[in-house]
Image (cartoon, rainbow, N blue to C red):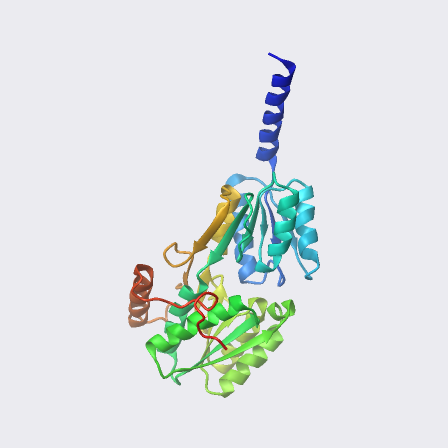
Length: 324
């Protein structure tokens, strides 16, 4: 066998060996991995992968916006693969680093990066939000329900828009009062402000609030408990945080996306909704007394109709819906 051929075989074997040894990495966005919401769902997905494989992974918690590209690049320099970026805000950073490290694999949640070594995930948050909007309208005794968002960005408006459609599907005359916490990344970790916004909405007659605000939502849930009102969690199942106060939680299964991409990376865009069981609502021992059989029956019927296409839930980011 010629030396050149032998070297070629050796190079292929070494590349395969390095790929097998590569550890995945995850870069959490603002709010921290233990935000009890979006980032923590991703953490749970990585922990599931770790438990099943017995392997380790790298991680980094971004504390300011300037760290995003630096963190992703550092993981790439360590040879991590796939490298999972937990925010649409990291799209430009992923694109830059993925181009510089074409042999490594990357993934991004909540945006699309069109490169051959990047897998992108988007979710149909409006579909899951529609269902919890229905539940809020059914549970409300005042006909007024609320929404508290984190950072005022189109993605969070997408949650609110789906929620509002679900509310109006049940009660066309219902009023939806909405507030956003802020315009910067700090809006994801301000429970005090979340509590203030919730109390202000309760004073206007609201008796159920859906919070899509990361760690800020914890302030909303506490205010709901203190006021004897109801709240709806987001991303992870947050029913346990305030049992008896949490009507439900709008599930966004980023844990499944993170787990799956850690197991098998497939370049391209995946768009996940009710049909893929990637969004939905939480029902468990903590809220079972709040969700009547009739409420569940109506929500499950709407869920089936959304999946079949009979009910079309408008997407704020695509359908010019619920514009403010």
